[in-house]
Length: 601
Image (cartoon, rainbow, N blue to C red; front, side):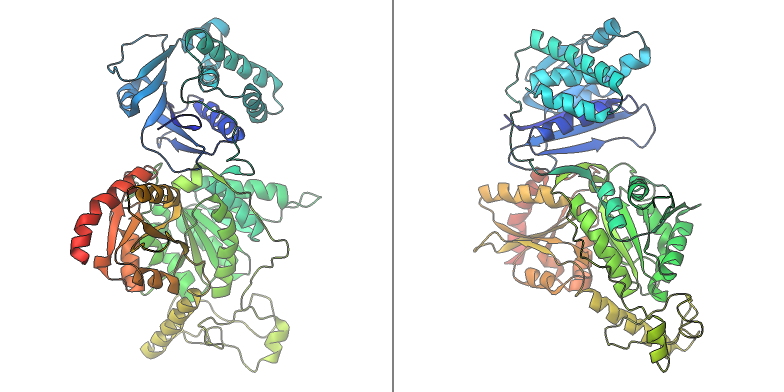
């Protein structure tokens, strides 16, 4: 039951109306009052004019996944009134601009009419100013209705417009107008409201793309080549922004390079060239870019060149839903390119892991001499998540892998670029200019022998492929292990998830326990899978595999690569482009259990 520090507010506005700033101020204010919060921005793939929604969930219990149903709807877009009205739960509230009064065809909700446009028209003459400040008027009304601490709200506004005193004063005027009207005309606060809490203390609010961009800086990346595509663009922008603060010398020299290429294929080509030359380099894209980059991913795999690719997944296929979230690139990333190709994947579960796995990705790419793909998604990448502050060990050193310097080359009788000296499938590499006479080799995408010489001998070609496959086995011992959460003795069934579905899954597991259903959980964090994945599957009768795509791609990967019996893995699939909810998982598990039990027993 919604109540104090437990509710969902959704803002229904128009893209380009200036509402994003006001909505963000509201979310940050809830957070600074110590209440755990999650914010989801649901926006169209155009510049201006179409409907957009911003959803803020407050949960003192700490649940940060998206929740079904809206307790308070701020309906500021007449085009979506019908949809917005239907989303309000019985007994909930709908706040709208009553400058043009209307009759709402529901008797089971509470209507809060505030003549926002009239209030702004009486106060300000500039039309654009009126439009922008309408948003802060409803924030002020919410301050009264939800019992927001005025000092906290003002502090957020001051931070938002730091250095712009006139804007601060004007926005606080708008807040006061909305607050005064709500206090005069409604019983404040509502049954759903805020009070100071401690659940968010010591936490930060950050997007996954900002976290990944900062992580790339800490990981030692110096070269980024990219082509803009939603929802990965802000990752590169974050990297460049942080480099501008952390990678510029006292005399203004930039110790980094960011190249906007003419297309995705050129972008990954530049990154691979930089990796071959010894730089830590990366590119960032989304599903369509993965398709275009596949040929060069095959080159990086076969020529064994370190490089990191961030894939911030979105809805597909084709152009699909550019501003909606999905996990539909799993197989495309795992097997990107033609021929026998298999890539190392990392699956961060939140912005905190977007930061930490950045360092892991660059280390793995150089240790294994191969492209490594960090598979995030729009929900993690572009939405604000509440996570622990990032931690970094200043004593951590970069793992450059098997790189021979001049002295090491002098000590060798002969050098072969693709020889398996240590039996782990990973050869030794050299960097251009290391030695005046030794260590040179020709990099090619055609078949080659252990000394990098061109060959059409099928036996040699197969031998090289087998050696690279051995390297993939080595990768399974180095990639992050799966997170396993035990329900304790007596849990015979399990659930597998990955990426952004973790918050909804954990909340669903708690609800299912109240239903008498206990499930152990395994969150996959990487591919290739470690031994713990097969062991978890072997220890459970039935396993629900939760993922956000139509074709159960992770389930397929578990069958193909971990040898799990198909009948044991029960798909729980969501692919409507919205962040997953706990109730969706709960219902699918409850619906699937009876028939699954009959089939499995």
